[in-house]
Length: 279
Image (cartoon, rainbow, N blue to C red; front, side, top):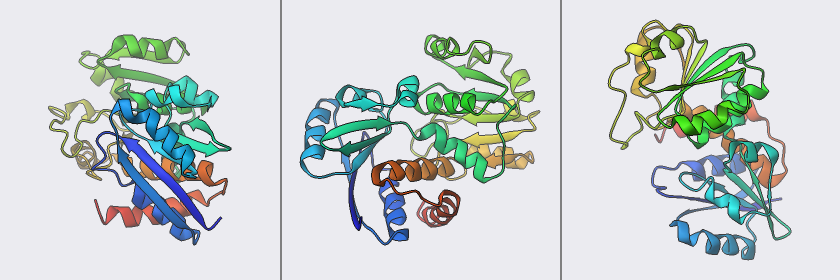
C-alpha cells in the first residue's frame, strides 16, 4: 500500500490534530495520506457513510459528539466497542463498515510506554463520558484493583458499575468523600473537558490533589499541560497529558485501517515531539 484515504467526523473539529498525526504515521511508512476533516450535523451522517463507501476510503475516525450515533450506521461493531457503547474508528472493507474503539487501549499504551503499570492499582476517574468508558473497560481488562468514578450523571455511571460491581464504585463529583478516596488512589484520571483550551471553565481549585501521591493523568491534550497537570507537578507528582493518549489511539486506528503493524512506542515518541511544536 502506497496511498491511503481517511477521514474524520465530529462537531466541532477546529481543534483537531488527527490529520497531522496520520500524516506523520504515513510519512514514517513512505505512504501518501489523504485525510479529510468533515464537520457534520447529525442529520448528515447517513450521507457521509455513503460518501465513504463510494470514494474508496480505508476508513474514518469519529470524535465528539458522534461516537454513539455512528453505531447505527455500521455493519459490524466489535465486542469491546459494544461494551463501551462508543466507536471512534471505522474501517471500510468490501463496502461494509466495521467499528472499533481505540480510546481505552490508547490510554493504556500511554501509561505502558512510560513504564507506569495499572495492574492491582487503585484508580479514580473524574467524569464518565465516552472516552471514560473506553478507559474504564480497558483498565478492568488489565486487572486494576478497583475503579472509583466521580461524575454528575450518576445513573449513567451506575450502569457501568453493574458490569463489575465488585471493582467499581460510583460517587457524585461533589461528594465530600472525593478527597479521601483520591488520597488512597494510585492513579487519578481526569476525563472531563475542564481545563481544555476554549472550553471556558476549569476546576475551581486543585485542593483535591493536595494529599494525592500517585500518577496524575489528564486526557485533555490542548493545552499540552493543563492547569491540573501544572498543579500536580508543583506537588511533585508524576503527570501524563492527553496528547499521549490521542497519538496512541490514532496509531491503533491506523493499524486497523491499513492492516500494517507499527512500532508503536517509537512512533508515538516521534509524533509526540512533532505535534508538541504546533500546540
